[in-house]
Image (cartoon, rainbow over the protein chains, first blue to last red):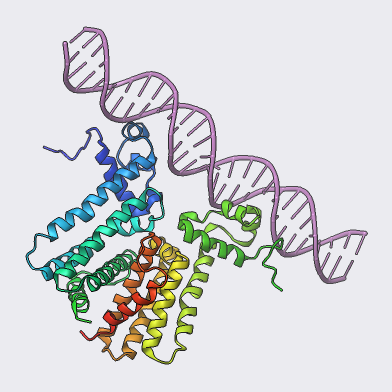
Length: 190
Length: 190
DNA sequence: GTCTGACCATACGGGAGCGTACGGAGGTGG
DNA sequence: CCACCTCCGTACGCTCCCGTATGGTCAGAC
């Protein structure tokens, strides 16, 4: 049984998970080895055994983020039958996640960092590409689909910004209403 | 003639402007007194004469940002005659500015900071409110206008994120085309 | 039981920034 | 020409964090 590591040895995955939380809370600057070690009940000696330096930790954390916050979601959404239902589920899932943690916006904010840039570029292209594909499946011609996918993604990004900034954007039960409104606007013929 | 201060004494406004640039480049963490002093050709002795501490500098920089990047733009846009033309000019101006500097997204990213939060809240409410007003002027009922204003603003925020992340979102001449597309989608009846 | 290697704690050196103390330069009024 | 005020440079102590060096602990191999 995985006893959630009370007094067990630490793994690189443990450090990466803690680093992701730190990014969500304080951005890249929040990833500091010594405070992280204290939070994990360990010391730097443990960290520098598993990682070469701080940058390697950030790398590992971003790899985990790329997997959990993009590919996993796409796989799950893609199991829906109806394209419109897929889009609905995607928007609901994404906005829901945006309420729970602010990792996405934190990573975006650090987009200029050389370690973050390539990961962010891949994730962004993947997400916009999938959205555009959904709009194509809804019957829009390619150029239209791409524009609407881009608009949908930028709207999502902005929404996460507002949420993280504490603005009452679309809270709780309002999410469903807002998603329906967005769906109506984005899928209406021009 | 303002000789752009070659060897002149420094004013608080000089420090605030430099701090704004620093925020755009490196976020709040980029606002460091000593590096800023070096860049201005001065030392900390000068800084701590004009400001009580680092936080006071950030305050001043944000006040300048609130004025220059919101009120000024609204005043200028509001001089247009046609509501649709106002919206078009606003989108074009905002997206154009987003290409030149990345202050907006940097401030957004620091939204959780206690000094930034109240300023950001005011600016956000003001911008969304003005956008909603524009959609009302275009004939949408209040609830519709608010939703579309919110969608337009989140789309703008997301767009600035993409631009700052180096994505080819809507570059140069493509801005006009993209603005027209967005205008078409956002002002089309549901 | 000893040995080896994975894993970790402790201690250290170094750098970057914040804030303070204090003294000096330069203009200005009397 | 002197006193004064504004503005700034220099020097210092402090904190936080990175990365390294080194020794200790514990499990399993044999």
